Image (tube, rainbow, N blue to C red):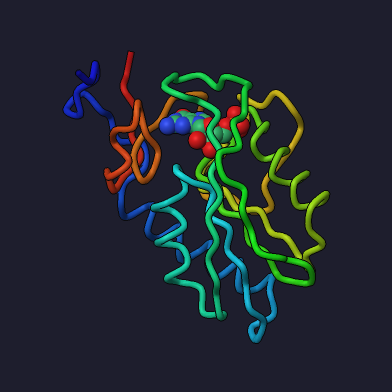
Length: 179
Ligand code: 5GP
């Protein structure tokens, strides 16, 4: 049985705020890549599923989508420092424009892992790293995304793809459980 009740959630970022931000981010992304160039969008599952799906609708370049899966929290609400690369299968991205789409940067370990992965395994033309949320105050290593939507406090948040024990990903807003 789930030990949290959806009715106790407090909304941090509304659906409208999220949707407005996506348009803003998509415009910035379009300004980085040449209008006529294709973009390989790498969606980092599972947390980025909603963000990525909604973001790409506002990008007018030709887009191809790839999905990789990494887990760092398990069922906890604190990062385990223990990254599990579940599926990193990608096509050859040499010479391609790549947009890495993350849900949230917390300690920074996942972002570092992904950045290194692209440096070591691929030689893309350009890589842009976008994260919906940025918990700057929770960083354990120095790393910043190229673009992000919202800076948030060191709170465990759910909704819009982000889960607690696998639940709440379907909420159209970002919320947290107050103590
Ligand atoms: P990092 O490696 O930066 O510590 O953590 C990145 C991953 O941890 C994110 O992609 C996300 O899956 C998970 N994560 C970090 N903070 C939160 C949070 O507040 N809520 C949820 N649901 N997941 C989080």
